[in-house]
Image 1 (cartoon, rainbow, N blue to C red):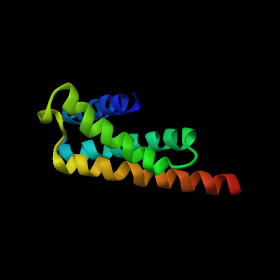
Image 2: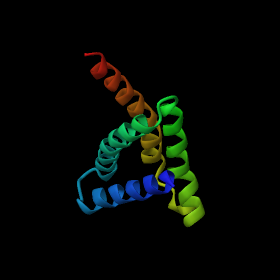
Image 3: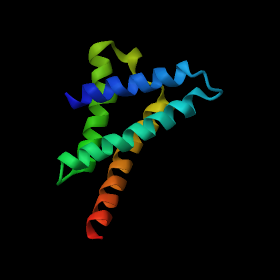
Length: 107
């Protein structure tokens, strides 16, 4: 379920980036998605205390690869550079959020 919601939000962010009509749509969409992935990383670390990075990888793969193929087909998958950036950034940002939360609780 979380993978479907993640897919819907990422698609909305990409459409918002395209509607803004910036000079570099791909970069703008990736920046929007990085901000969103930071928030998703916070939610993942909030509810998964043991392996949040593995959960992030699972959610990203399900939400960005499996759900679009099941709903529409292979043509619904995002472009490769954007897909790679989002897939890589979610586990990294989840790890960063986890470290930040550890530092804040120590103080």
